[in-house]
Length: 132
Image (cartoon, rainbow, N blue to C red; front, side):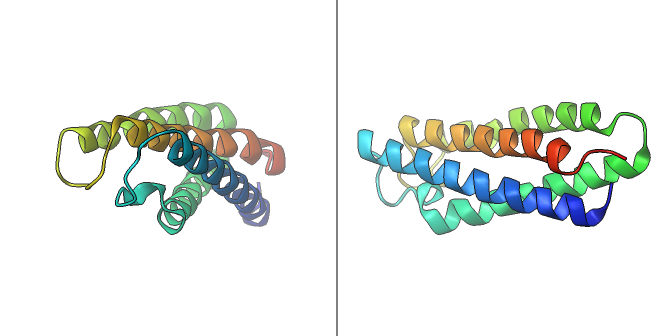
């Protein structure tokens, strides 16, 4: 698996995830009472974190491809573990004053955005950068 193909897959996953997350943020902001100060649902904030997450996933996927074996299966497992772990800080937002404006709806939107990003990576990486 070439780094170029992984980079293309990462670009596609980032675009898909940012678009999906924009839709989620827009819908949740329009149907619930999420305060404007809840920054994780502001476009610049979630776009940056989405791209950073996709880059991290791309690095893991590329390393797994270099290690041989069944990199796609291992990537699925790691991606699912990281997804579940990513929910821990989200739940923490509800019980702390760390992030002003955190509501149940806002945190649910954030968690759904994590799922969208993970699914974009899980689907697009193996399709656009299959193991050699």
